[in-house]
Amino acid sequence: MSHSSLKSATLLSFSTVRKKFQIQQSKAHKRMADPTPLLSQSTTGSDEHEPSELEKNHPSLDLMIEQSMKDFGRAQLMQASLVSLAGFFDAQQTFLNIFTDVQPPWHCANLDDKYCNSMSDVCQLPNSSSWQWDYPKHAFTVSEWGLQCANSAIRGLPASSFFMGCLIGGLLLVTLADSSLGRKNMLFLSCFVMSCSSLLTVFSTNVWIYSGLRFVTGFGRATIGTCALVLTSERVGKKWRGSVGMMGFFSFTLGFLSLPAIAYVNRGSSWRALYIWTSVPAIGYCALVHFLVCESPRWLFVMGRREEAVETLKGLAPPSASALTEGFSSISLDEDPLNNMDVFSAIRALLEKKWAFRRLCAVMLVGFGTGMVYYGMPLGVTNLDFDLYSSVTLNALAELPSTLVTILLIGKLNRRSSVLFFTTLSGCCSVMCILQGQVWQQWQIGLELVSFFSGCTALDVSLIYTLELFPTCVRNSAIAMVRQAVVFGGVFSPSLVAAAGRRGDVVLSYGVFGLVIGCCGLFVLCLPETRGGNLCDTLDEEERKEKTSGSCILC
Image 1 (tube, rainbow, N blue to C red):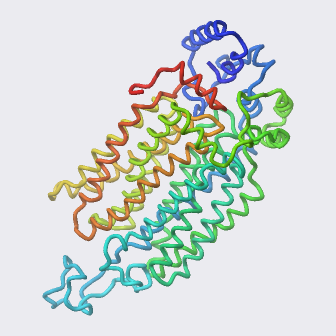
Image 2: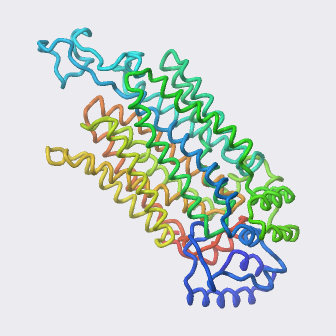
Image 3: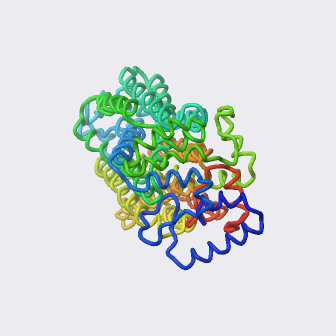
């Protein structure tokens, strides 16, 4: 049953609604149903939904936008590509610590020194002049500031500060995109703060200033992924949301993949060069967002800015569909727009509604587990006996098939079972990385890649799952909360990896990663299945759908 049909049917009596639902449900089983309202690829011919007389007289927001933008034009492609590009710069700042803060390689200054060998701990050597760094001291933060013997908390402080900034920034900025600022302005502000603070990082003189600026960088980028994902998804028709929704993930993967190349070209140079190479282009991107990106028509309408919504739709929709936007004046929602609420009203609404709170807790726990693997695995490869540049490149490449698998299977597989399968697979492979012995060590990098691939796929599917679980008025806030749970999992990863590196025990990293993602993935059983459902715009609509679905296993 379509979202617009459900919304219009509320004007009828309960018996009429029930009868209409049964008739349309019967028809839906006789034809190929749209696998997802958010990420389906296409439906053509006689299978396209034709608006009923009731829908024509009482059009819904979803119906109007679907009719106006069901054809993917050049303007929509440009907008989707431009917004998705934010993920490229976001990924660079997220994983930059892998190359700037890693323990540099070293060698013995005197080969005849009986105390110094390749297995020695530089902190236990009796004479500091008995060993030397392979690269200049300014090439890495550890060698420049003498952090090689610092405890794991200090060594992991810059990366942990970044993720803590992401966490706090997400909590403080979480509802601004849903309330006062909107999707576009929030995206611009986040990118600008991230880029400028990253550029200022080159002036750091010690680890404390460096960590503070990394905190600000994390604070700024906290909402980039959320705003980009929601903004691209809300400006296209149903059959194109799958493609544009995954463009952001693909862009993030390319940004991650660009880091090993940039780091390899600048090897031996100062670690500050990496921040310059990644921050200056990002500042230029901010200017493009400010002048070229348009706001989400859905958000404009929910905020009561109908004229701007119509103008935005006319600019995005093909010329043949521009006349359809005239029907916006007759659209009404089931509840007041969010501009009558304070900035934290969206979170309050999520906490007050029992069904929303249950869903939010479940997807946040899943996000915590996937986040620990997603952010921890690339850092943990520094503890494996494998070349740093090659291992990080392989991890980045593992995200590409992850994105492709998500694109190909998202319309065919159930959300709940997909997340459960990939989290379980990731956990098992991560735990197997701790097995000792020469045979298992040869398979370590392979198991690590499978675990990372599965974690990435689980994360991609869970974010799409979250988009479908919550209505428009709180969707951005819900996704932001889930992403903060993902980041919260990343907060613990640097310290675990640093401790594992000092002790030479991968159990502290890969063992913990595997147990956490495996256990957290089980909470997906508390969520309803969304494949074959429809997007809602208000909490009342979603609540009615919740009462009639009953698809949750452990609710």
